[in-house]
Length: 296
Image 1 (cartoon, rainbow, N blue to C red):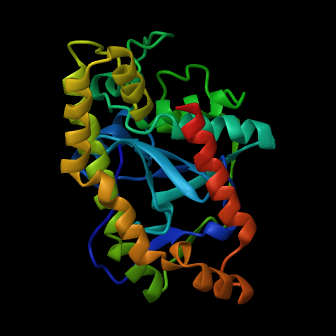
Image 2 (cartoon, helix red, strand yellow; image 1 turned 90 degrees about the vertical axis):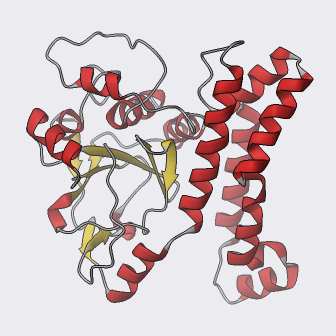
């Protein structure tokens, strides 16, 4: 249910990040044939749901499973093609921590077309058949992890049901017309998709390798635990080879090129003194990653 545009149109609309808060839900109108089918089936202008957390957007897509997307690296053709809604209950820091942890530990979870189709039917089960994901289920389950039940059936719901649940209000001025510079930025990102492709590639291979032993693995955390449980050196090496061949283990080199200050104490100090970076934000990022690694 995910749509992002990669054309070089000079006109477009982007998220106004200054108006967004962690926990916001972003509804996106798609332009592909299956997106139009979803809109017709659900009676909504929107075919995709995303959750905004820690200045990133998390989503479940057919092409990339559960992953993150840089919020200012995409655009839509019309202002109404993006809508941001916010739960009427003010989310506590503890609630947001649980929501974010659920989202981050779901990275790599496979997308299920069949489960997504069930969500648009009249008679839907209350419990899910498996732990795979699709966009609106992922968003609803993330919110539920923080104690927020956005819809009656969190396992089988649609973007339209999130929009019309009555639990949200629209965030005003959350979408704006992009400047030429913002459009250039929105259409020029290459490293994040590269990282996503590598991650999806090795996780897919690892799941195939692990299937004879454990066919329930979904996330990278599941994979690591399954390898530890298997105590099989051959399997361990095969998964490691898949990671290396995908380019996943080289992604840090891209970060070193783009964010040089993170690897140079003098540059970091200079940028900090000039107010170009926030030490609180940099520490928060590291704490978030540390907590995630402790969890998985």
